[in-house]
Amino acid sequence: MKTTFLGFGVPAVVSDIRGEMAILPACIQFLLTWLTGIALPGQKPLIVRTNLSHLFTAYACIIVGMVVTCLTQTNSLYGFMPIGFLLTVSGTRKLSTVINHFLVHKDFFTGRIMKKYPRRNNMLGEINSSMLFLQGFKQYIDDHIAHHTVKIMASILDPDMAFLWMLGFKAGMRKRVLWAIFFFNIIVPISPLHLLFLWARIKATITDATPLRVLVQSIVISLLLVLAHYTSFWTVFWVWVFPLFYLYHIAAIAQFLSEHFWLTEVESDGKLDLNRSVKDLYNRSLKITVGRACGTRAPQTHNKPFVYKLILWIKWWLIMLVIHLPIRLFVLPGDLVCHDWHHRGQRGDNWANAPYARLAFKDNLKPGETPLIEIWGLHNAISAVFDHLSKLPAIQPVVEINESEMALGM
Image (cartoon, rainbow, N blue to C red; front, top):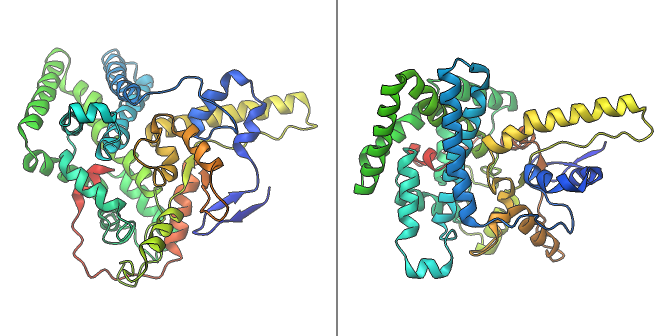
């Protein structure tokens, strides 16, 4: 299998990975499209999702995950607790990075509802962020809009990049050092990732204390105290604290790092050259974001013995279900697999059915337009970003980097 590179360290396998899966039964192709985030040419959704359906499934994942964790912990079925953790984190991440994200862009409720109930948008965002003990929704709006500004995106002035810098991910570092920093941050409970994130959440709870936020968080804490009364504080720890803090932080940084090719084309101080035209900076923003497909190549079984084919397909399904399915739920819920398409889209685009909308957009690209590119496997996406950072010259920021609150928007 030949591999080339498409710039910024992006590996491009000369193979139609999603197309190779088309040999599998048609009845499971819609599931493979959801899992991978990539639709087959000409494929239409079996079930057309609505924006509200994503909200309901996010809440459902949280509730089911908490119930599973509670039942397994109280009945000493510890081997099944990871299932509860996975569902809880998936639901909370979806509320934050999908639902609240599109509430920021005012692209969750329809125009008619927004016009009739203008306060509903921010109210839902504030309820979600309060329930998860994240930053206030208004602050998230300010930070995220700054992130989308082409004169700032992925530069040292980007609050997202500033937070990565605080965690130790810097230009010019060796790739193995970047990987070491990553694993240190996610594994060690007192790493900069967990401590900064925890402090930012505590700070946001105090400084962003609107009446609605106080009400929602009081209800959540009261329910947790009731649960502790009828079970134990250890149950509350495993049901809420562990997945909502430690595991949530891990999922956030894994998604965050692979989101863009950070610090691309910046000056020696980490800033972008503002003498460049807005069109040029916009084109840069298109090139620094790729899709992150969850999956791997289907086995090549042509002219292979039956038993060998069977072994290869069993191995492939194990990889898809044991590795890529948890990553899809844990790190890349909702439309996050199609984040490159999001940076091309406009308000009103069909993000609820993102893989199919991305395919339609890709098919309608004109000659000469920046193509949509996906990297298969989250580990490859992170590796490509680290490869990119390691090849950059070291930079010396001249601005004070103090944006730990941005972690809450990840």
